[in-house]
Amino acid sequence: MPVTSSPTDPTRLPRLPAGFVWGASTAAYQIEGAADEDGKGPSIWDAFVRRPGVVRDGHTGDVACDHYHRSGEDVALMRRLGLDAYRFSVSWPRVLPTGAGKVEPRGLDFYDRLVDALLDAGIEPTPTLFHWDLPQALEDEGGWLNRETAYRFAEYAAVTADRLGDRVKRWITLNEPFVHMSFGYGFGVHAPGRALLLDALPVAHHQLLGHGLATAALRAAVPDGQVLIANNCTPVRLRADTRSDADTAAASAYDVLHNRLFNDPILTGSHPDLSAYGMSDPSWGGVVRDGDLAAIAAPLDGLGVNYYNPTWVTAPADPGAGLPFDLTEPQEAYARTAFGWPVVPDGLTELLTGLKDRYGDALPPVWITENGCSQSAGTDDRARIDYLAGHLAAVAEAVTRGVDVRGYFTWSLLDNFEWAEGYHQRFGLVEVDFATGRRTPRASFAWYRDLIASQRGRTPS
Ligand code: GBH
Image (tube, rainbow, N blue to C red; front, side):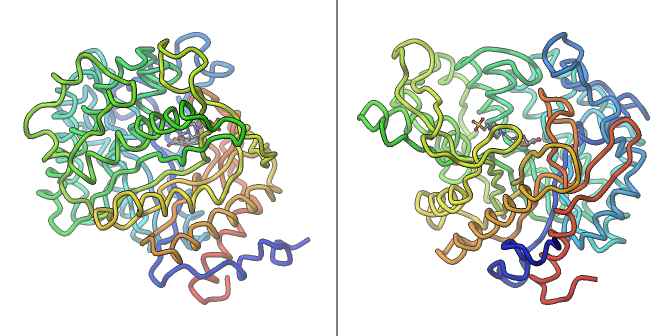
């Protein structure tokens, strides 16, 4: 059955505003491989994946999609899709092998060539400066628990923008500082593998400070550039059978930790009062210094939002022990991705209108910087088409309700190294055979290509 006769016919999706930017996302450690080539230093992920038992089947990103050697082929795929923009990340230890000091020109050369190839293909390069692959040398000094890392991040931003800023005009500082803090330092399921629970909170502030200082560095290096951050945001929901005051308080606490801890400082210039939600950290007072919030709240050109699904929360079974909420499951029988994540497109409308309600005029234009789903191997990925169609309709609905959304980057262009899941979760519009590196576009690839063309009012070629 041809894709165009299905209910997800791309020509029948609501029209996004003129000039809407259509994109796809990837990240350095998840696709590049070439883990120690051309002078690249080790990152915390190069170290973490070597610990026994932390990544399913001991997979590593040593080779991944081998994008470092196949970027020409990958840009050709993007051109076939008709992408307006490509969001990739720059590997900090490729540019600065020990995180600071000596620059590795071969690392910058790789991104320089990639940027030129993208521009030749009419695709806007949209780099993210930090997608979790901190140079191991900085981890040895405490990583993001150490305030100094924020200053090193701004120096790295300046070096990278000095080289690419004549051609790259839209920059993203951090990817999902919440997930890096909680998975990396709170629970230890991602690099650097520290399980500090709420003692990880300084990692939030130091990443935000790094964002603010890097924003200033990017403004100086690229005066006509735009700066964004990509925050992982989730609407917080309660089950119908758990709606006591304690449940409501738990939902507020989770919203503060996941969403507001990272959006409030940037958009309003103040941290939410964590202690009012049962999350005090004894060191927090000393962590936040005079002037930090002014740097963090520097005006942004856009807020990047990575959305996968809502989060269901209840009051903690054991109040007083650990966190002031428990995560739970919805009662509704939602479709599930291969990862087991519920498919809830209206959660994206709820999230976007909720941001507008909360921040009002302080909310800059929003960009969906990630959205997508994992599916089992094979190229007939109808469930992915349903997922994307549903979520794009949800974006269109939010636009109708007054949210200024400027672009959409699907996660992901390629199957790739899915962190603790290794190569077991496949998020790509393009299937990758990791034994050979062979790329095979899926049904969703043709669908997304047709969607982009029809949104532009053209017949797909
Ligand atoms: C992003 O993180 C990353 O930026 C990207 O690198 C990654 O490959 C991609 O998403 C796919 O994972 O079990 O229902 O509670 C996403 C962060 C955190 C979002 C866990 C979904 C759990 C859903 N994710 N969350 S659920």
